[in-house]
Image 1 (cartoon, rainbow, N blue to C red):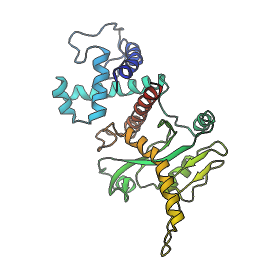
Image 2 (image 1 turned 135 degrees about the vertical axis):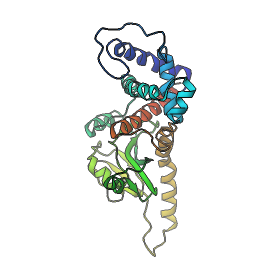
Image 3 (image 1 turned 90 degrees about the horizontal axis):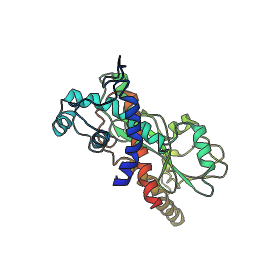
Image 4 (image 1 turned 180 degrees about the vertical axis):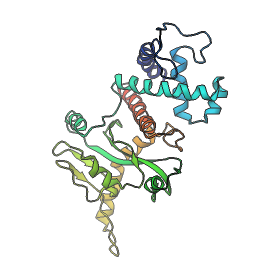
Length: 284
């Protein structure tokens, strides 16, 4: 992030921290008496250090013991801070209107504002530790990636903003099945660029653009090859979006945080950070 991006995010983050700290402690318990100043021995002093702490963790995905050594605190204190600061960071991005929508109806309203633009949709997977539960292992195992993963569906625009992020699901679910399950609504005649993972997907209203699939023992014609190459050169924008989201290594490397809600929230924050980057840099 640039300095201006950091401090604009810090303004909202600091406001949320000032609302949280007087009434709750680091364990999330409500205080008996309100507290209006930070204790002198607090391990992270000031909102700037707190925001840098949580962004550093998301960017580098270090061991919490390594974070403890870097920021001179205990590993348990690192865990406590993350449980408090991650939701505050998510709310700060929401106040800046940088988070993607999560509901199909919200996507429809957003697409109505993008007159004349095509949109891109793809699914992205991120590795997670293998669960000790056999049933969960079976559902999270992705044959495509050869490991246990979580999956999300993303819709992006021509300016590399993430418009929609689906709920986090198990990695074994196929891209097309996930899209059908979300029941997304698209503006009539809106161009939607997809890859071959969505063959057979027919959302209402959208004008689909898919590559030509090669059939067994039937080589593609030169025209079909040229069409596929041209479509891929246009659709590569969504790959750039997913690469931008995965600059946050917490969603690129194996996720060490446990719990479906926190894994979903970290992915949402990563999309919000991608949006804040491209929004500020497109304006400049």
